[in-house]
Length: 311
Ligand code: MLT
Image (cartoon, rainbow, N blue to C red; front, side):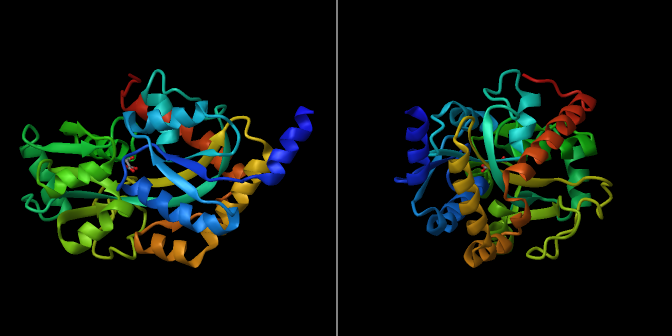
């Protein structure tokens, strides 16, 4: 019968590699987390997780691809806060954050950093704000498309200081960072999982972090809060999902493998080195469901207040 076939499939699951879609370019922050996570989950899952980058439209292309994928446990999504913001920014994001997926669990929380090309004149956040106000027609702000974390942070920042900058969209902040290093764009707000190594090497200029507290790996970088931007705080939480209808025994196995992966010393070390917090206690479907339920209306309201409409 169908039922026993389903049960047999779940018992054998997984008998081949699992595909994990990252909805941004390779070499960027989400990809960085995904590749470490894939490796960390492998022993508990007993199969390889193959990371596939399906970039574009602020992450909505890859996310909606997983929403439409066969719910057999061999397709999963690693996405971040944009999962909850894109539905307010696109008239048709291609998925419903509450009904298109089976949540597996939360993964990490990543601070953002406001950075610029190494030869950008301002040397601290106050100078940066003055410079942007005086040169707003000449400065370009990179992001990973509408709905991306970099878009969210960039919008919060330009709104906070009251300037409109020319934005240059990429399919991920991996390629945006390449252009920043190549001095083809000026400013970027990006996650520490992509910026830490460049900040430490001095190949970019860094001005502030968006977390409530300073980031231990970047102790010299002031928070936005202490720089005078009260309430400017944003953390880029990441989650893992499977398509709606993926059988419960299968999603349970994915959740168990996720928990084992997050607990692994190597994953924890790598994430700590990149300024990310591992969300071990929230690596379950209930916590991710709650997160999305809280975040979707929160961002919808914030965009409405800021006069940002869905396109
Ligand atoms: C990426 O992996 O490229 C980023 O997460 C993009 C972003 O959301 O800013």
